[in-house]
Image (tube, rainbow, N blue to C red; front, top):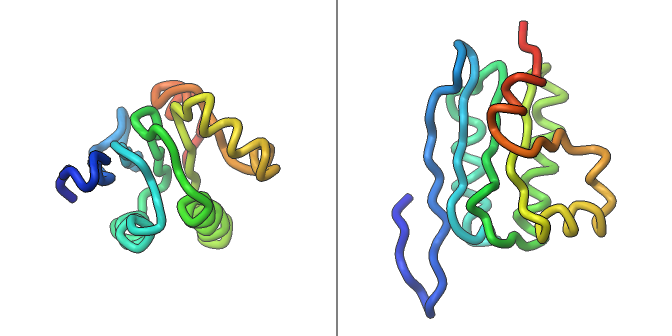
Length: 123
């Protein structure tokens, strides 16, 4: 997805890359994550499923409730399919959202991508 400007706000872009070892996929989200991006996000996370998907949120300044719902849907999907995921690099603002929504203890949260890759064991 391309970055563009709409009323002074950037659109979300999602970059897909390989992790530091086989079976690891990194999705780097850049820009605000909102309702208009949810369907594309869902399509991407369902495509080419890896043993471990790390979603790098370090460049996401904010997300709305629809985006949070899509992350929770991804969490449930991973549990059902027996694959692992991690959310990495969430800003203080996003961490506050997770706490207020009372999902911070449910989601696999890590401070950065390398920590997530190291901590998440995949078979």
